[in-house]
Length: 321
Image 1 (spheres, rainbow, N blue to C red):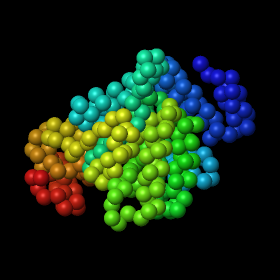
Image 2 (cartoon, rainbow, N blue to C red; image 1 turned 90 degrees about the vertical axis):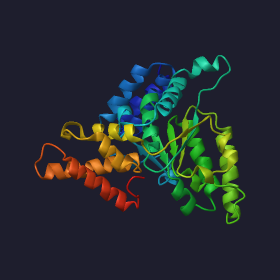
Image 3 (tube, one colour; image 1 turned 120 degrees about the vertical axis):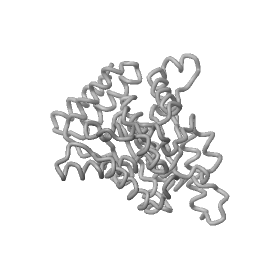
Image 4 (cartoon, rainbow, N blue to C red; image 1 turned 30 degrees about the vertical axis):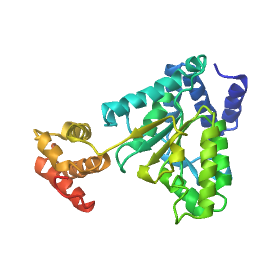
């Protein structure tokens, strides 16, 4: 149930017309209800908030110091649109199930999976997984801009990390650290500056000491670049790969929906092998736009194959790869 201070904060923010504060407190309530097992109520609160007209990605007003480092995201895809292997889907479901049963696990001295590492090529569903986890847990989603943290704040990165992890502790949410390898590289690399070694050591300590209710999701395109000491800080590692023939067919069916004719999906999928999930989706979107602009009700197979070929040429992928 909502605490008295949260109820007062909701009323106060409403009377002051402070929409940002009102949303923040409401999301905290949703997270608390979800963690208590009241999933339906948590989703209803989130749906009410999402119904408000908000930009897809905006800077959150946490503090001025973090304004350009932490962004709040909105779900852009459904769970059904996440096309991954059954093994990955089971792991995602398990993370959400353990979150909702964290109190039950705690009674037996067990902790739910909270620190998750996602590894795989670009465009294979890592970011969408963080969105799915946000929706399934009822927690808001925040994205930590690792590249900006390293390039803009080198010299004060550790201090910024301390602020970010204080936010992780105080504001339960799903926190996505994208391009994690930008900061999680090997400590022994010859070309690594001393400052980055200190930052990595600090990051290792922050992750290990974090005992918040938030989910920490780190995503990397280059698993081999990560320091081995990072791995034991994570509760689970999810490996992503480019889609196989069956997954490509699912992506095409999901994307084209009513615009799909009597296509030879197996032949199309064979032609698309080597593309990522995002690249297959983009090829479908290119074909859809052409159909709409030319007032056609169906996407022609020849056109879709051409769009797939164009994508492969753009990314330097050989046919049949």
